[in-house]
Length: 168
Image (cartoon, rainbow, N blue to C red):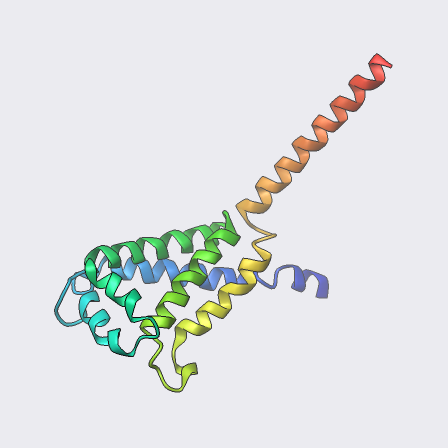
């Protein structure tokens, strides 16, 4: 029982992060106030509000060059990362993307939160780390692809072995 629990230990984290990022991205894409350059609740207003307290104001300045474009890019990236992690497809790469999104949000939007543990972006950054390291070894497209490649490789090796025995 303990081995089975250890084997599937990352699955709840994968589901939580995947669902959360899909939801966050869709929430942004369907919020007309957020997808505006200015006004209450807009990405532009949020970015201007955190610019001077950000750890990396230059990053915020880049986002402010095209706030709506940045918002759409962020939302689409969140959905893509979330779906990939849920499916277990290119999980390490998707988790690295999620970690980068969380790092960027922590250094800009959540940086001024005091005490630091009230800001959730740092916790998300840390939550992505096990998936970056371990990927999705079970219940994933990655594991299905790996299993099929291994089977094909074994078949090819067996076939080569049979051929070499015939010619010897």
